[in-house]
Image (cartoon, rainbow, N blue to C red):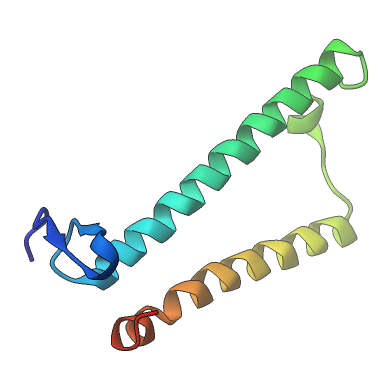
Length: 100
């Protein structure tokens, strides 16, 4: 597999890898990274605003220990997120056989 093949594909979009599924996976990864970056920036902004307003003391988040029910909810949210990401990638082979 060549890493940079720069082949034109349907729709005029250039491909970076020999197999279009690898390009699709890269696109998925980049979308996840962009979303993560935005959410992280918003979280840091919120933490700073709360600390500056005196509503959150330094180290409060690191010291927080959730109740068992809250931790269980977070675990379920994490599993749902992982499932959604993996399911999004599971149709890559199908997309390559039936492009839009």
